[in-house]
Length: 146
Image (cartoon, rainbow, N blue to C red; front, side, top):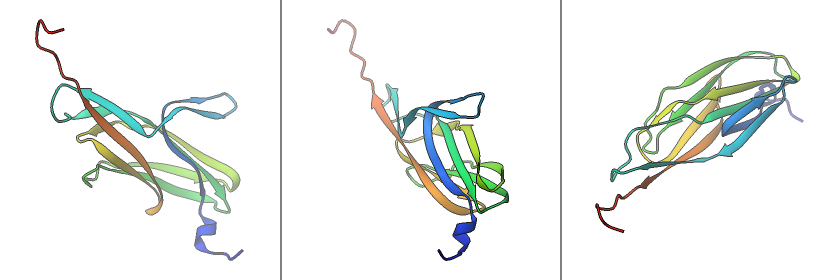
């Protein structure tokens, strides 16, 4: 196998959104209800700003890499607007040792559609995680209607 720069960076093992994460005493993680869509309801014709808070789970394995790296998550709206980034310092100890990040992603969704969350190691794009926001308008009946 050729020795290229990509063989000396950590490997991504998991990148998902879920509703909840359990971390047992022995360090084992369980991602509960993995999601890629969130339903938002309202009475307005267009979706209003809505706070959503999925839990992000990122797991990397060191492989040949040893040292510190910054992990960044950069969200983008369906219209391409960049939202505030999250940054996490990470220490990779080599081989099968890894880094797990569990973060509550408090995001203000201003539009429905497909949001993308870029995951970067030191500004190198590793993956993109999609999250679709679906808006459902609730129509209220007039008083006295069945």
